[in-house]
Image (tube, rainbow, N blue to C red):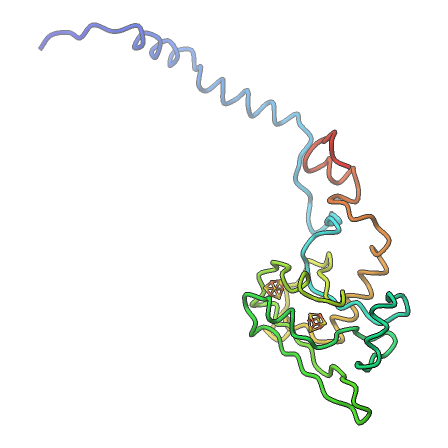
Length: 201
Ligand code: SF4
Ligand code: SF4
C-alpha cells in the first residue's frame, strides 16, 4: 500500500484542527452575542403590549352613541341597547369563517317586528385567529383585541359568550380606541425585539 500524498487542502485542514480555528470561530459568535442586549423578555414578569393589529381574543364593540348615522338607520330593524353588542345577527362572520361551527348565533323577533340577538358564542378552541370574521362584519361589531393570555382550566372556559365579548370590546376600545393603527405602539418595545428600523412609522 503506497503512501498518499497530501494535498494543499489536507494541509489546511490539519492546520485548522491544530489551531482550533472552528472552535475559535464558534466562540467568537458566542462572545459577540454575550455582549448584545437580549431580545427575549422575561414573561410573565415582563409583558409586552402587542401591536394594535394583533389578532388576540375577539370582542364586540357595543352600542355607545358614537355610531355613524348609517349604522343608526339600522335601529329601525334591530333592537339595540346602550352598552350592549351592536351585532345584527347577519351571520357574515360565521359564513366567512373556515371553522363555521365554532359560532352559535341566535336572534329572535320582538313583538314590534325588530330583531334582537340573544346568543353569540364563539369557541376559541377551534379558532385559527385568521381574522376573516372581523373583515366580514358589515357593522364593525366584531373585532380582535390584544388579549393573548387565553389559557383556561376547562374547554368551557374557552367559549366566549356575548357578555365576555362585550366586556372585551369595551375594554379594548377604552384602552386602545384612540391609538393610531400602527404596527408597534411603543418604539422602545419594538426596538427591543427588532432593533431600530428607520423606515417604520
Ligand atoms: S379568526 Fe378565523 S377561525 Fe377564528 S372565528 Fe374568525 S374567521 Fe373563524
Ligand atoms: S358579522 Fe358582525 S353583525 Fe354579523 S353576525 Fe357577525 S358579529 Fe354580528
